[in-house]
Amino acid sequence: MRGAGFLEAWRSIAGLAGLFLLAACGLAIDADQARVCRSTLPALNAGATITVQRIQAGPAARSLTVLYSAQYPDRPPLDRYATCTFAAEGLSFKKAELVGLATEEGPVSGASLYLLKQYYMETPEGIAADPGNPPHASVVEIPAGFAYWLQQILVSLPRTAIYALLSVAFALVFGLSGRINPAFGELAAAGSAATVAGAAIVLVSGLNSPLAGICAGLAAAVFAGAMHGAVGGHFTISRIQAASPQPSLIATVGLSLVLMEYLRLVQSPVTVWLPPIWSAAWPLARSNDFLVSLTPISLVTAGLGLTASLALLWLMKATGFGRAWRAVADDSRAAAMMGVNGPRLLTQTLALAGGMAGLSGMLIVVQYGGLGFSGGFQYGLKALIGAIIGGIGSIPGALLGGFIIGLFETVWSAYLPIEGRDMALYAALVVFLIFRPGGLLGLQEATPRPV
Image (tube, rainbow, N blue to C red; front, top):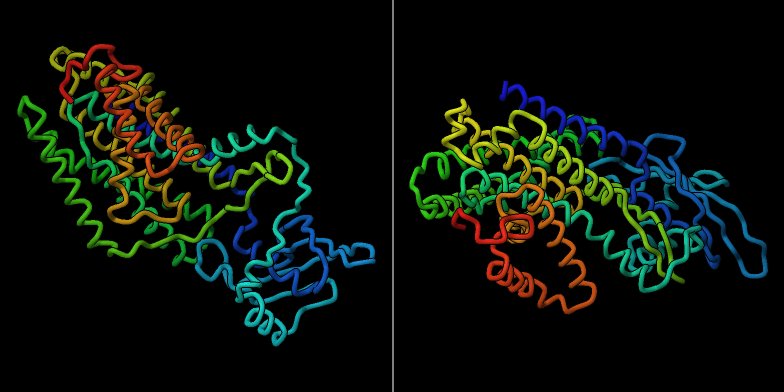
């Protein structure tokens, strides 16, 4: 029954994530393609001031249409449009290659298009000539200080989701076993590599859809993180029965190094980057000429992190797996006497924590494009700090700690010299270990399990 409850919980998590991804189906305009198409407008309207009104899907496959106005001196504005056709779409690296251009006056000839690309669009002047989004976006006017603060908070949402998922991975394992696994950063890197592989499989299969690529990357990342987390944790945590946590800590540090080298050999030292998707900024508010904006992919990333966090909280509170986890965390001997299979529960927990780490790696890829084989170390270290600040061993505390770390980095970067940000973060950890060793939602006294 406990195994069935665990499986049912994972199905619920996958269903919630799938519903959120399906909600993104309407994000059909590729930001890279829109930028390229907008960049043709100054050349088509020499001497005019361009104001982009709307961008929509084009009449044919792999095309989009830009509706705009061209204001010439001493003449009324002209309403025009340009339809751009591209070589590919979705996750293909050729998606921004312009192969066709048409206006209300008819198609642009092949020779003219070649000259436009060769001697204008690929020059620094052409790249800088993108007229961008309409400057008169109809959004609410807010004070300058609040606009800047709001923009920083919106930018921090994806990073906060990543830290929260990694922090909760530490809390899941420590709360059950009293052991810290510092390899979760490398498990996030494994999840990012699996995301790229899943997206590549979708690309070569011919689907070439960002949504399909994200779904495949999500499944691959969670599977890779869960598999590596369960297998690695079995040999470094489950099989080491010493009363002291130090042997297990040394073993998991070795696991971290092994995973890092393993990723270097598998994916090579060169990081593979995915092209940006759903990165056109949505204006939300303004202060004079400063627009507060949010990209669709940031919303998707933050939403996936929130969905996974809420699903995990439900899993730990309302399922047999969560009740068994809490029982073993409180008193493993009493739980064993009541029929809880401790070793199996630990394996399931290691897999769940690894899946959360793999999901965080997937969020890093879709938000930032990629993660190198050694790039997970800093993420893992900061997430561990978040787990300790929130209350190591507490699931809600770890989520709170990850949120605090993301917010702290954002506020510091916005108002203080960024060079001292990490030093201040590590100093904050020392302060917490001295005055609140149990964390915000942990025990006020030092945790009874040695860290």
